[in-house]
Image (cartoon, rainbow, N blue to C red; front, top):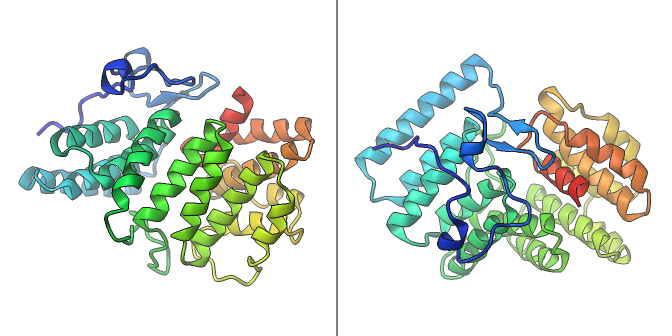
Length: 318
């Protein structure tokens, strides 16, 4: 079974989706250098991020095992999801999208496949396609119970913080946000909050609701929204979101958040998350030049799949 063939994001969109190409469109695969995944909105060619040799070897072995399981049972959608997620864990996002697409061609609309493909459309700077997948996933999810969604890279406690429905609405809201559809995004963030049942996911939902309310100029609602978020919350993974929520309450300064993480190394994702949050907060309060300088720093973060980096690219492209 061939799972690694090139997959072009530019497959005749008018035929596949009955629509024109999105406003911001990533380069078709045949217009990219060999091995590249996508171009940033500024035109930078982006490749799979480098991994330490031992990490790469482990993840490649995990992918090979997932591929063997799929070959043994191709009638199980979960096996396709597993391969797609393992490809993404190696930074091979286009191949992951292709895997999900082939599975959807086989099974028809399936909630898990749509949820994960929607996520990776965002990674590939295709939020309009993400919205299509995730809106359909949200519809399908109404008929099923929620379920845990374990990370491929578990935290130190082995605690699963995310769920299927929480992640569907999280990624749907984010895609709508990137497109500037803030009213729809706020509605989706609120639905995400309904399925957020632990401190980590609550902080994530509160943060993004606050970001979206700020875009809408509804600052008076943010203080009440963030009030339940306290410094002593037992957060396992999403510390950057927690810190941003404390910033909205005035308990942490924007300057502290910008200085507490670096754009390279192990804190790069936190830098992207916190940097975008601070930049948006300042921009919505009229400090546009300062905000733009922050967005430019975040848009250069080496972890280019980080949502803070992607959001910063969209801010600079508007």
